[in-house]
Picture 1 (spheres, rainbow, N blue to C red):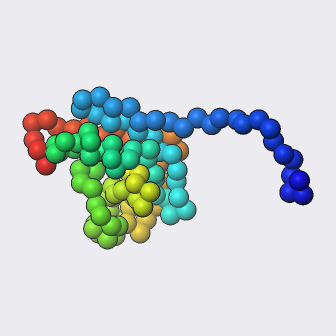
Picture 2 (cartoon, helix red, strand yellow):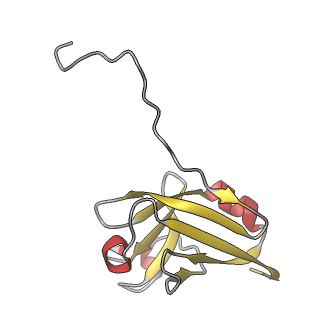
Length: 123
């Protein structure tokens, strides 16, 4: 009571869910951290469940930016290079090592991220 009004109703918020078909996962950037890293609503579990050993390409909003490997740490790539990894909460994160992915790649909240799997090659 001292801090504010007590609310008796709950307002539900929209939380985008990834969509999946046989060849693709489509996710959404749900958070941009203070370093400019983009967190996507695709979990590690969903990714590996759908990957099934296949090669993949992660396409960003602009088709000129792609990633085809999952890194374990930011240092797995050179300074300024793009990477994808799963953060401590298990969500896909798109980042640039020691740079702002949001700023330099033009990523924004609610941008679509697409992962395409290749059935012809196993990785």
